[in-house]
Length: 339
Image (cartoon, rainbow, N blue to C red; front, side, top):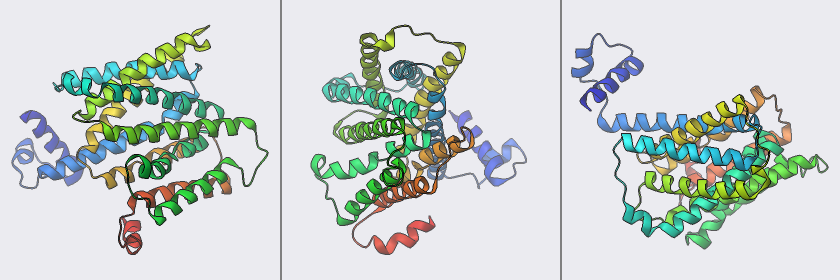
């Protein structure tokens, strides 16, 4: 453990201080980061990496020639194995009592997670990655709209305006206001994206009711249930018939399971423990921005003026909604924009 801390401090000096004459200087230097500073820097690096990983997921799914249910199943199974190995190597303690106590809720969450993956992967296959991502990013809007009913939180007038603004932005992205007769595939993809957003919002709200479980315990339990549900789904549907998997599919599925599920989830959940909710919300915008940039640069999926305007309305209103703090939040907007 001491050697690992020493190595971390050494890397810090090289990357952020610009010089490190020798190991003794790194070990004894008074300029080495404070414990809190180091944890915050490490957490921000973790969540940034996780968001970039999640934002690139659409590229992989688009190039896997398998049904969405099969992709989701393999992703879940590899993710469970990877997270279990990481947890065991870190010697994390698991509370069977806490998992059993939350058994019913974790089961519902696992089923919801499996539906979320299927809907999102179908969205990627039916429309552009940018459109699917923006449709999916209505999830925070649904959370805000449903929180008064589920969590008994107050819905302010400002947040209501943000919800309406996001819905208008979705109309621009979908083409309902500018291209009412566009292809049916795009509308199907948007529908799947919105369904994924609803299921993700449900996950966010229902996870608030879990008690006495750590982030790792809850994640592993939900991934495990999701894998079982997806196995039944694939077995009982046509997804199980005539499945042929090529070398490319095996490689992409491995990356999707290990990197985009196991590593991504571990980075995300281990980072949010050391960050404020506002900071997590701000960093989450790296995900859709990454997805839109990659779809434009790599897949050449162009966005018109209406789609760009819709993206600004959706992401902007969601950001403002998450940053609102009563009273006097309007006066804080200039400060918020400078951060």
